[in-house]
Image (tube, rainbow, N blue to C red):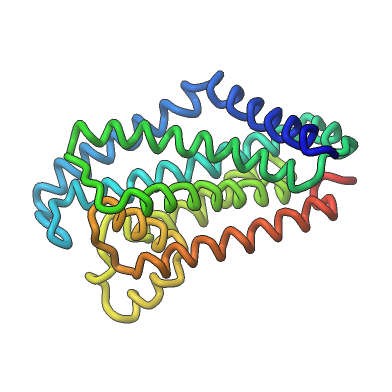
Length: 257
């Protein structure tokens, strides 16, 4: 394909993805906003007032970065897994498979669509958080880099889940039994410095811990993990999942019968 045709294919996938989730915004953009508002009220105001400070900041300010990342993670993941599996279920994916569009263009198109939703939801939650606390900006480049890499990573994760899924129930297994526990245990609501040495070491195996702490460093300037180590780990996961995704596309895993 020529560069112009490649760009046309990529932009077509991205535009279709953006139109899809904006057309049904009451299902894609509104629920995360409502859920995060409840977190701000319950954990930030009601429980936070009893907890006091954590790492030198009031509890609301401490958990806001983690809640923003939680919204970005779930939205990026959900967009790709639901969209790509829907294409499989409706057998529309066959049109892409028989076209001359390279696999990497298909992958990047869906990932960019997931990132668009994830970043959009993240922006909405950030604006909502301003009604509960005053956000700081310690390091803007780290903030932007972390949220972009995290959104890309979980868009890739959603793509792999959609490739492997054979029925609608399969696309809810990973978010329910893997993604949600890792998110809640990823330092969103607490500093791992509060944990005993053993559980602190176990927490270091949680990839979401690095994302939450890198983002928290960008906003507050505090982190339980070195920020460069965190960014390096996220990038490493992205490379690994991108390689797996491309290999699965090449072999037609779950999409060729």
